[in-house]
Image (cartoon, rainbow, N blue to C red):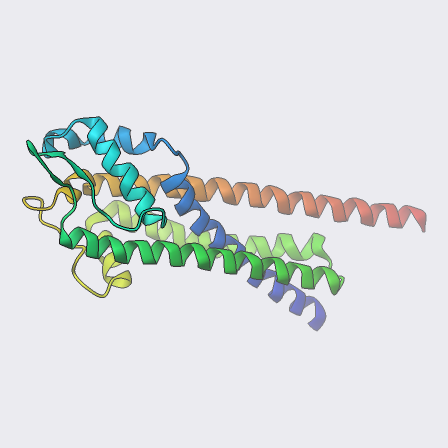
Length: 240
């Protein structure tokens, strides 16, 4: 009994790490899943970003391309000369650069954490396999427990963001940033005009959809493992 509980505990830890890595992957997929950034383009049209910036959509997309390359570490500096508000100037100001440097570090750190969690989960699953744990029972049980916890968290966050997205958005920034550089002024900061609150609200929904889709695929994989071990157990019984 103790052995089975130990295997289940290891399985639950493996599933939690796997699900967290899946969540972080969902961020990357939602943000960078489309190399042409069609989601961003639709959002710019939806929120009439070109009107508030006095820019052509093609110029806004060029700024987006550069900004996204910067966040993933493919551009050394956040600086784009473009026509905005009827003048040829750098789209980003000093505050933009400081805040986006923080965002870049947070994002790249998240990707490294995702890789670490994923590898750790694989090691734990390999450990269970080597210890000859009943994977057909351990994985479904561990997955069910992990999903119950994450479902509760998702429901809570979903209700919170629906009731007051602005407050939740503020709490998120206060948790992950140690300064107030994320507090922009629409009258002087072009970036906040390009990325209004509605954009982030829609992005949260997009990330959630990727995450739920990933959880379904993970559940399918667990179901296949369960079926494989059940069929194998049935074959052993027949041979006896």
